[in-house]
Image 1 (cartoon, one colour):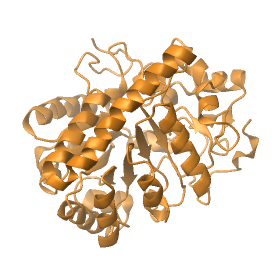
Image 2: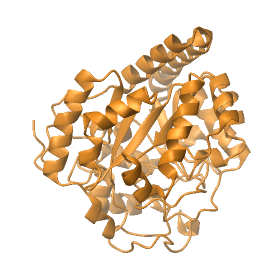
Image 3: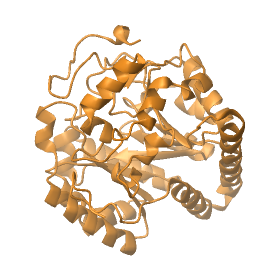
Length: 389
């Protein structure tokens, strides 16, 4: 079945999140014998989380997602072109107590996977310490890689429940153009350290009009596999300003990339994920948000996803269970068209006007200072989040 709005085939086989996690854990356990006991703990944590989710749904009619996104800091040591988080003030950060509490409550409710973004997560000195307090949960940490040194790699290897996902945009030219001069060499050096310490890790790349052809080549994926990556994540570029739309790949480019990706999945021994494309079901509806997924930003505001920067609840004021009953998130899940795939990868950004209407009706507000897609391309944004209800 082809989606008329985005001209892509939605009947292609999608990667199931549970399958990906189970396969990652099995691959991890095979690398080094001494990690078997650690992966055993993760396997038990995955099973226990599933039991808790089913119990909450059956007894409390509470939809608990398998995984959530969380950005414990908005600080970053890079200024990447087109970054979706650039409109947030960079001094925003959860306290250690807030970060620890939300993870604890989420794990208790049945969340197993935490996709940790930012900002740059490794700027937090308490990051790995907090990870270590929740060994039965998996922390998929999206990082620019520039802060991973020998000591950090050693600590990650010792923990056994951290999967670094290192951002790279192709070769040296593509990466340095978007992320800054010299970043490619620092990223590849970080990958070498992770590989030397036997850590399961992956790469993350953004599909723009300029990069999509390079990223879809066998040579790039093979180079990442040879660098030690077990997972590869291709993220469709999501415009956060009108000027950003210039970087969107064309429908023809996206179609060619999907064809190449299917070939690469059959040929290359690496897990390849295409986001948010792989999150849509055959009807073209976002499974991540409809399944209860959310993103908690650095100020504690609970957004439906990192790109849809609206919120009603804040983990500084509500418990995680209260957040799960959010009228705003429930209204999004119940809406007949809001989560439908369109020309822009994220359905909520594609249906921005409808999202704003749902936000107004449920008392939610913008978490990015009120910057709209068509308003600004300035990285300074405007205002603060004080106006969020």
